[in-house]
Length: 250
Image 1 (cartoon, rainbow, N blue to C red):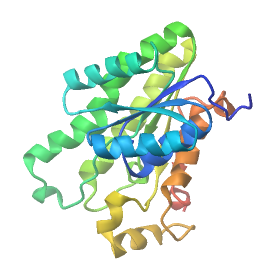
Image 2: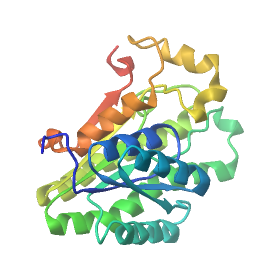
Image 3: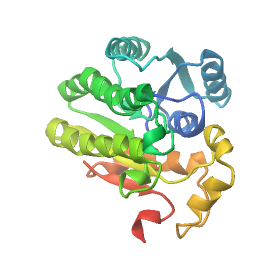
Image 4: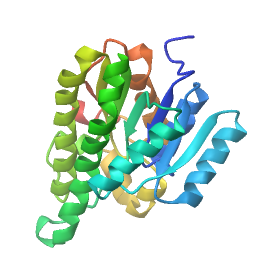
């Protein structure tokens, strides 16, 4: 088995019913993982699962409500059950990314963003990483954003939540790395998905600021996630990998 192969491993991908999550689920399955497709929309989730199975991969849908600690813990338990008693790879991809002036952000939206972007990954890692550590191996990949690295008007709430996730990535690497669990993050730049279609020209304008000059395809971000999840990244721990077309490098 090559270093990129994931045969025999169980991977839980949150927010896997569309966009980057769906592309990641498909790629991990293509490389041999049994993928647990987690999301709120069963119809879309089952469609992702069917696509993976049609290509000869192994996948199951797991319903996920990430808005409370209790529901996140329930997801972790159901994932372990569906995975035959374990989860080897966790991809914390689910999240929300509202934009807008700080003074116009609804009060409940502040809580929602932090519940989904920070608390849900925290509770999933708390539920799943100790068992990975007990087995002596595991990989966790957090999906962040390039705007966690620099200030962008209108993105204070979203960017700050992902900046917290970046710090959690490093802290978890220090905590679980000595016991064989690698924790890393990917910072996507503008990516053309079902969710960003409504951004229209704003997405292209944001992408034009980077050397690549274009939005990413979800599959390009999935490749970075799959690398960090694989043994090819065996000596990579606590890294926050930009996949932003070079935006944070200039």
